[in-house]
Length: 201
Image 1 (tube, rainbow, N blue to C red):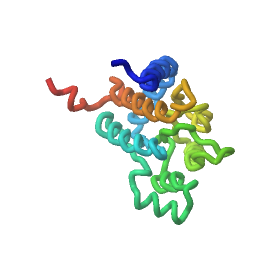
Image 2 (tube, rainbow, N blue to C red):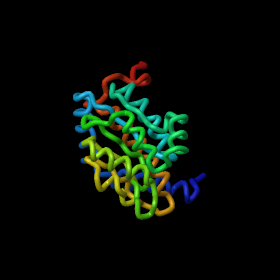
Image 3 (cartoon, rainbow, N blue to C red):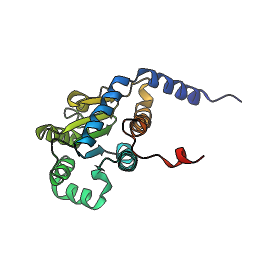
Image 4 (cartoon, one colour):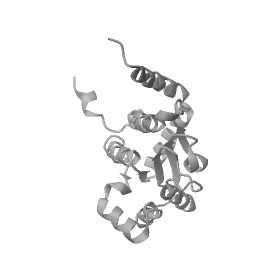
């Protein structure tokens, strides 16, 4: 039995996405993260929707595998919803970063399909957070899709997931966010602790 046309196309697109990723940006992220850890910096993951789910997973991996202090504002539902209710969605990440006393040794790491676009009123909270991060001299990294949006414009290192088909932008972007961050945490320059199934013989 052969695969359905959509299934075959989807996996063919995965190959095209892999071929189109700028690997030099991945290596630049590794260098920035090594420096961040050496300087005792913290890593703040920002994402909404699927990006928020990826942020939760990434926080675990960077803390447990790399020994980097990491947080995601979306993990604290009580604070998140209280701030949305009282201060609005657009400023929710900025207020979290302000309370965390974001500093120049820290970095924000964006998981976003569009990267933020104020003109189209998309992910304005990410744009506001990046402007705040830049104002305090914090680093900026991201894994984004489409044209990269504001994140790509201001990031110190940013991987843009290539668009290979207009109807699969979101699934490929969010899936490859996981591919890239798993590469990062397993990179020999960053991995500080072995993962369970790599230890089992």
